[in-house]
Length: 584
Image: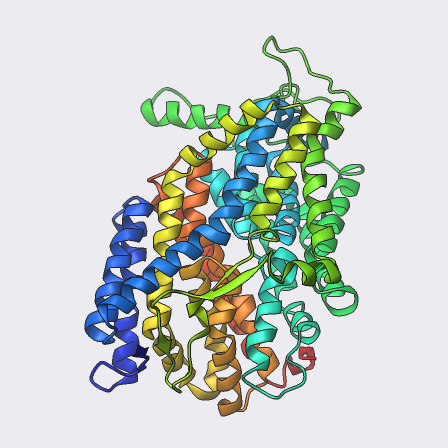
């Protein structure tokens, strides 16, 4: 039995909170500074968190180790369970050759990589986030981008940055459902329900949605990308943000991302019928420019470099590249039949259908009971909070059938039939998927073990309580709590379970609106997703860069922190008379 103490170091909350940051600082320094492999950084940081828990927070050795085992188990199920099986479904499309059909279909919308980043990473990624979440959008879209000619590190950065605004409503709004459950138990405010909290989040994250596509085109093509494709980027972001706001406030919170993703994709496709960029950034052109830069660097006196605005690929009168990468090996274009295109999209249609059916309230409630779902106390783990009450996270939920990963297996079995993949090939593909993700599996399990040790030992709560002591200024800091929670756990749902009640309690003490503070935890958390070690590991594994997670981390950390500052300012203004009218 262990009871948490938030001020164990020198009986000082500030000093204890400072010590609680040691595992986090270790993790980020090892990743971003020393460029260690993510699985190595995760295991070392886990060891540091155990030392801090045992030595500084007085957690018994046995309890600390049990906390780590529960976290590792949670890392595999449900998080890795869905990622592995989602990538398996993708690998089935590769094995059958239909992924190439899907790629050519996207190329027909536009061969421009900046447009492809919007449609695939932002719109299609948002749809995957709405249905599954937990790293699935990054795992799938990053490989799709690479197949279209994106460089690995750029594909990873684009996929991670795009996976922001949709996260709050991911997995049919699971983060907000969790937030409502934990926050309503900490306050008697009747507004702390899914509808009102979803509406409040729907008045914060849509603002991010307007900005993110602009960030994506900058990452893909720098200032030239923004200058030439700002119109579709704004159309995409504004359409997504508006649809997400409308759906979250007036239609359905769980369906917010589905509606927003489809509306944004439709808006971009319609725009492309009447507008094309002044230059088309094809994969061939990017390759030519990179080779030119390398040649210029190797031979600085070899001559004047071609002007940056001149295309190195021949384009037709429609603005499409003559060599878009969609041809056959001998250069002849490939024309896919309507049936083959339908088959290529079929796996994702199957996923949408399965998740939509299982999330019908009556069916969802049915599968939430035994024998489909079990909840049990983690053996031997007994932790009390500061009030002497059992900590909820010591109970492990095992929803073996309705789990998103299990549904992905069902989708994979149906995909096998549609794409005519033999059972033997499907089984071999499944085995290869585990081998491909071995580093990511270790990383995710280590990081979740670290998160559970920090949570159950009181390290995370100590850090949160110290931030909460800032009073009215807490409105500016509130999103940071969510960011920290997601950066450590990789899940907005987990961050809400961790800090949701604390946000509401602090709001009551500081005279702030509890709905605003609870929603800020979710909205701030979405910006921690791109720097979460487990997401970095998934992205790196998917692009064949396992061990170089630090390179990807440095590519996205600036955007994560910059957008977090914007969210802090927005929430701060919403807590004052300036924007208080936005709070429902």
